[in-house]
Image 1 (tube, helix red, strand yellow):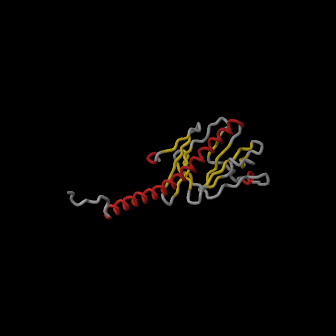
Image 2 (tube, helix red, strand yellow):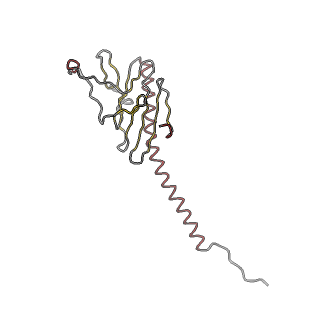
Image 3 (cartoon, helix red, strand yellow):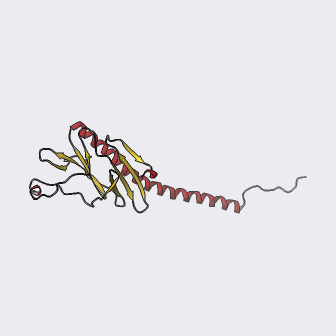
Length: 187
């Protein structure tokens, strides 16, 4: 004779514990993806700037021309030196090297020779042929960073930050154009 059969399975309590654990893991994963996505946005902007600076350096060497980079608090633009007019001007008809604006929540910090540079909110005004600024002794426009036809450039460090959560990516570029993303303990 057989004794009473015992049914096997999970109790309601065990099922609830498993559902709770899955919920906690899923919630953590969703929050982590949100945080990583935001950090990736800052890194993507820094990667874009690094790539464009490399292209500008290559263009300077290939074309034998002098270029510059002007930074503002919320963006940057590339300029070229016009030796005939003895002045800096925007690069015409080049969509790749057009002025760049960071997303609204991000800002730029610039360091030259280890010193912080106070950046304006808007780009500086170019001197035109109609301007008589030289005669009046007004200082002429000059970019923050020079990119020479030899391929050398002004060494600098640029930080792209999002102040709301202090997400930050720092890019250091030396005189030869070698780029290095800095670890947080290095800046």
